[in-house]
Image 1: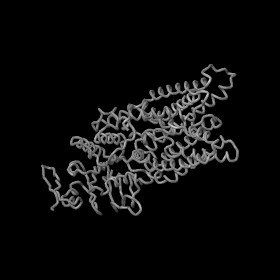
Image 2: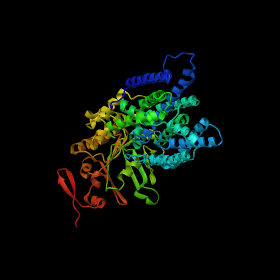
Image 3: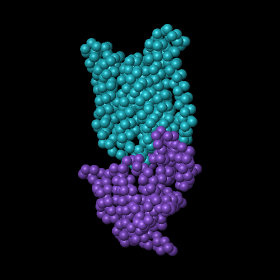
Image 4: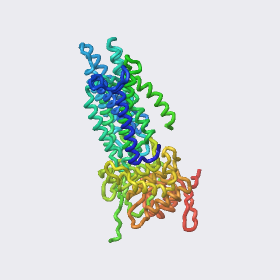
Length: 330
Length: 269
């Protein structure tokens, strides 16, 4: 798709995606391990279990897709994802360490995991900002691909945290291992942070839509954007903050769910083009719908066993991504 | 009206350099230079002498090693990006595209300094972009993907983006480098027209390698040499002795009617 998107077409695309998202959410609420059924208002399963879970999946999916789309613009790399700069590693190391410590004190730890994840993600962001200070503060040369420094710093941070995760898994008592692995693959059971996460998603979506025109220029090149009047250093910093916040919120709520943040923005870009004014809101809707459906599959495919939702997103995401890669020229 | 022309760009004791710390290298020092509306300057000099660095410093992308650059009286280091976008534009030596985009969308991006808020681009922005594409002979490519264009075509799309941006000062880094013979003429004619439009408002600064194209189109020349720079009317700077001093090779001059052609000759063994 290389045509210019008119306003009318943009509205049409967003309406279609809103309808798809609504459909996905209704399916996720109506269906479960006991089959699909009409909602009885009195049945507590819908309101107290499935609705918050479906909404959590939608919000987390939206956060991850938005973070992925922003990272792809920031790094000017269509194959970047929210975790590429080490945020997932940091939050996983934090969450698992917290679970380990909590178990020592005989305390069961959903809250501990969420707290540890937020702390770890924050630590990873601080490390990244500290180490990549130079790359963020200066404008790269015009016509040069940039972001290598940022990306390599992030990859190293991720590798360091990966070692910590392995260490914690080795030290953990056997009884804890299963819970830890489930956390690593993503878990949407805990809906307590739903409201703050939803508010954050809304705020970030508003910020990125307001800055979408400048992000469009940034995607064409840092020097190019600066020449056309975009304060690039500030915009890159804010974009990194926004993407980091979205990622940190998503992993705090649900663990490190993979592939949504990579595949969804990439697929949307192939479908509607690279205009951030439409790509960013469309990614949020599609990411939310995709994760709600993936969670539905995780709950129902092997019922009564619940699969970790990360397994489903990976099993679907890998072939979809390879297919997208094969048809692109990258 | 007094006849004096106000400079559009002025460099005061400007020094530019590359690198930092120990590896720092100063390329051009103590340059005093003024560009007035209506002038078409070409910057000549050996590879690596600092033409690109000078252009990027003039455009405000790089901090000068010393001195300052004023465009319309504003220091480019302190002016905001938005202000500068209407004053100067720069066509880089190459365009590094990371994402697919239509040629037309790439040119419409040049209208950014004139759009406000969340505004969707308007019909007239697209019309201006089409006109710009037409002027660089790329109108037939408007729906093509920029990542599939050849190097020369991509540069001409970049030039169209600069036309759409429509700044007062056009800066171009080797605009003819990737162009075939016919397209070189198209580009130089176009720049000549931009500089010579009446009333004189705009100026052009282009880094070039083709001395004969420069002799034919440029009104002024800035020739960078080692620790020395020559500037002035094209005819006065483009002299075989000066060129030899700057490039380190002899030039044979062929008189062809009113036109002089400069042919580099191999230096004696």
